[in-house]
Image 1 (cartoon, helix red, strand yellow):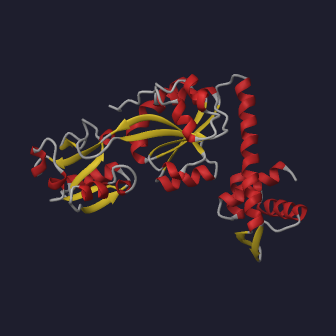
Image 2 (image 1 turned 45 degrees about the vertical axis):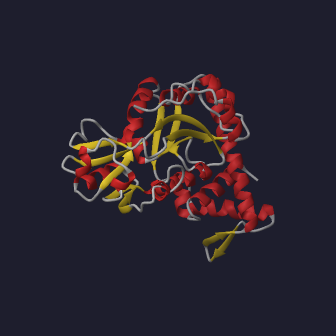
Image 3 (image 1 turned 90 degrees about the vertical axis):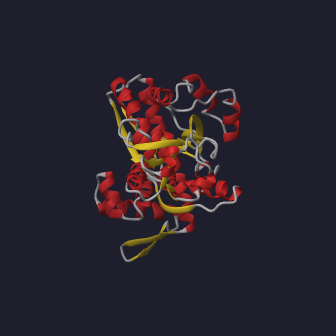
Length: 325
């Protein structure tokens, strides 16, 4: 059994059993990948894949176990290489971040600009997606960091660090009746169509739960993952927007009226997560501190070997998590 065979195996699994795509990602030939997989199966004494002709149809139950262990081995090899680079004190490498549209559009640009200036030799890769899409990237070991809000149950393998809190706000056009109300009530919101995030229906302060507690039923006209899309539909007069306050740009959104929703919804927490057991390079610690200054290298190192999220939360319980402005 050879390391490159395990790398081929993981790549095939990550490309939905498409050997051609895996070979392209690995910069090798399709026949070479197929041959190495067959050799690995012969050595193991059982089939990893079910085949239909030359095509791979699905993974066998024993194959699932082999792939899971192969992922761990490939990941640890990457950690060893990272450790070697760290011990050489170089400032080169790569940092792959998965996050949502709101974080990528409104929070990270300033952070990434500062990081790029300090570490020009580090290649940055930014991936946007829904919580489900990000969870798939994590499962495939495609990213170093995740920056997200909620969805903790989707990321049990990550150590999650609290970055900042944010609140929802109510957003309407200047001519809307609610523009004259400083803090609209749930009853007033229920009188208008609502445009909000798809995730507003799950987790803490779920929109449906908040309305139900007030004895109201929301008239949800449209949902989207993208804050900019929601704002355009607000401008088009399709409804009252409920957005994250960090998604409001004072200059670009000057035509809209933003009203507080703090009396209706509880604050939300944005966190940064990395895989338990991952090797963090020096520039990674610096990136975390740029995102959340209270997460110093010392604080992160104190929890990076924690076996449970409960242990992480206990260690960081004394941190005053700021609201992002």
